[in-house]
Length: 101
Image (cartoon, rainbow, N blue to C red; front, top):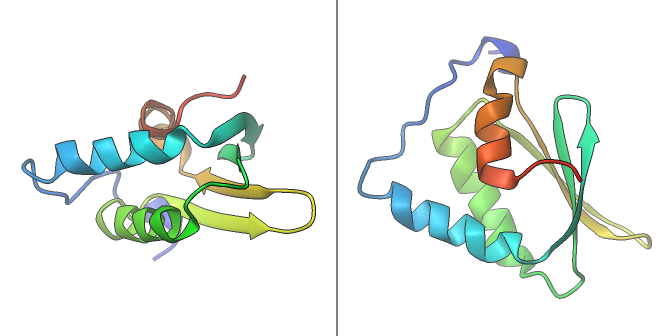
């Protein structure tokens, strides 16, 4: 199913949501800058960011919120996480990952 046709809904249980939000808040402390990209944000991360935790969270988030799309970039320039969502889900994306500076 194309991402644009995926319902804007989260299947995470109410009991699990506080823990997931706390996990994301923890890794968001490693974000150096937020830049707008088409359909979302590019989060430039500090080199000390915990990659296993970030990739695990992104995979778990995509499982319950299928409207999100994640891409991790590791190259000589930087470490970055791109997060995209359909236009009507951008408020959810910004609530979870912040807004571009």
